[in-house]
Amino acid sequence: MNVPDKIARLMEQAEALAAPKLSEIDRRVDRNQWKVIAAFQKHKVSDYHFGGSTGYGYNDRGREVLDLVYADAFGAEAGLVRPHFVSGTHTIGTALFGVLRPGDRLLYITGKPYDTLHKVIGKPGDGTGSLQDWGVRYDELALADDGMPDWDKLRAAIAEQPPKVVGIQRSRGYDLRPSYSVEQIGRMVRFVKELAPETIVFVDNCYGEFTEETEPTEVGVDLMAGSLIKNPGGGLAQTGGYIVGRSDLVELAAFRLTAPGIGGEVGAMLGTTRGIFQGLFLAPHLVGQALKGSVFAAALFELLGFDTRPGWRDERCDLIQAIRFTSADHLIAFVQGIQKAAAVDAHVVPEPWEMPGYEDPVIMAAGTFIQGGSLELSADAPIRSPYIAYMQGGLTYSHVKWGVVMALTNMMDKGLL
Image (cartoon, rainbow, N blue to C red):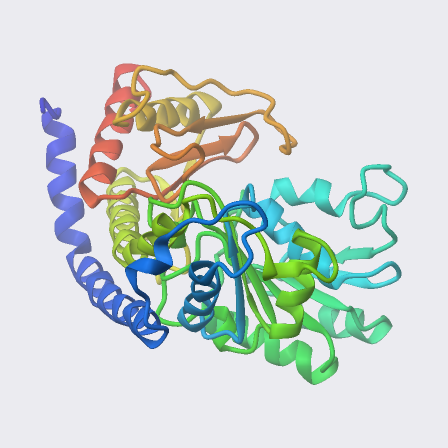
């Protein structure tokens, strides 16, 4: 494939360096795969569950069993899995609107949430129907220097007015702070519940599914949401999202998705059920492929002297690999190189643009079979200092390696490496 000699040598060094971590990921994949299969077997999944439904979708047994399988795979009481969710932001918004009421307080304890959620939270009187426009009070706490919640400030914030919902974003988003492990999330849950037992703890689980052997709903999280075109869709779900957690809270979210009194009892699946089931079956393996690619990329870029978060040795709690560059030109060349490695739209040259829902120009490499599918190899970044590229996904480890080759080659060709 005409890999430049310098890059070929770096690849060999990086893979040898990271070999123990790559083997560890394979072992984790096994355990998560077995867990998902057990959920399928418990609910006796059969081919007749894959049939679609139309109209109202009454008595769609495949849809009902899909909810049960998701709930079991995530250690939750109930699940709501639908192609009708258009994005992770929509799914998260549905969960929050489902459980919050005018006068309630939402407190995010992991700093500023991901850019696309800012408009969902909104501002009082903004006229958009945002949470604050509907009279929900919103507060967020800056993180302590170690990247964890500031426990003293959290204690004071809860004492001032116990929040109806505490929000936790598991993944780093557009930030260099660490993503949170399930163990760390469990610590947050215990801290909140000791001070405010009735507070609902909500987790945005996007990019985190199956990166560890347990999920946040197994350590006391009350409600959790994510996107099917990220980890749990396994590269096959063409759209959709999931909400899992306490039965009463999932039902409230279902009322928000459809209408009060209707909830999850309706919703034609329109031929998507098979892909969502099969995607969940494949998800542990494909997440493992993406994780191995991220470890490899971190090892290689560390050999070149770049700041990577997480480092190749670090534990991983999501798919995202952050790489810090020294200029916008470095950043853009990297993202454009990732695009050149795609099987789809490799000829397209991404450029920064004002993308809806984002506060800065964003450049995105997304040569994916599913539009926006971030379990597939992709990379994106806001064009702002510090110049950090966020690479995620990769349905095969080999594809991630090729993406890194093309990114480095593109940087070399532009005289940036």
